[in-house]
Image (cartoon, rainbow, N blue to C red):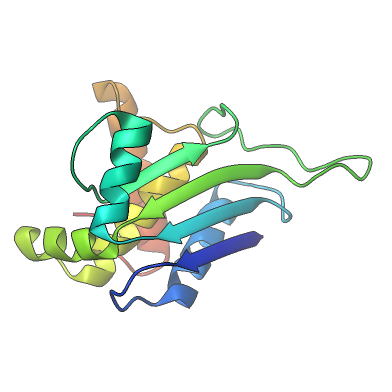
Length: 155
């Protein structure tokens, strides 16, 4: 797995743990080994800008996913063939400061909350959504399964 993490903010985070978690999600979803994902860690101000630009919402948020392809849950991208480029899923943008405040408000650990946001963001790249109750239930179940497999829990 090719996971690029850009830490462009000041909140202390375990970048290696984030990279490992992204890889675990990709493996769990059956993605080919050459699959690429970018993770960008930003501060609240930059996240608010992304939120406005991509989702037409104001203020910062915890996670934004920007998929390159439209995938379906449980149907990972195929491996590159004939020397073609590796499958690039897209970008997951996280605001660790926002996630830390959210964890505190919910009585969760920062580690569990950021793990949930990483898994949530990557699953969005893989086509999971939560627009309907059925979609939300499927996504939450998959989040819980993956988090449990890496020793984390879903709130």
